[in-house]
Image (tube, rainbow, N blue to C red):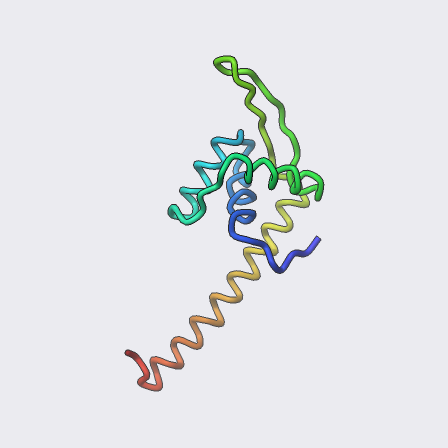
Length: 113
C-alpha cells in the first residue's frame, strides 16, 4: 500500500510504534515528542486514526490490560505498516535532498538573504 499523502499525525503514530507496542496515551506523548510539540493528538482523533490504520492492516491490536480501573489498549506496527513507514521516510529523505540541493544552488548564486 503506497500513500504519498501521509499526514504528519499518521506518520508520527507509525513512527511511535516502530520501536514496540504502546497504549493510546503513550502514543499521544510520543507523537508530541517526535514532532517537537507540533503534533498534538486528541484522544478521539487518535483512536479514530488507530481504527483506520487497523482496517488498512498497518497497525494491529497488541493486547489490553486494566490499570487503576481503566482499560489500556495496546497497539503495534504490522509488517505492512513498517514497510509503508519506510517508504514514507525514503520519500521525505528524497524531498529533503532535493530541497538542500536547490538551497546550495541558491547560495552559490549569491542569493542569500
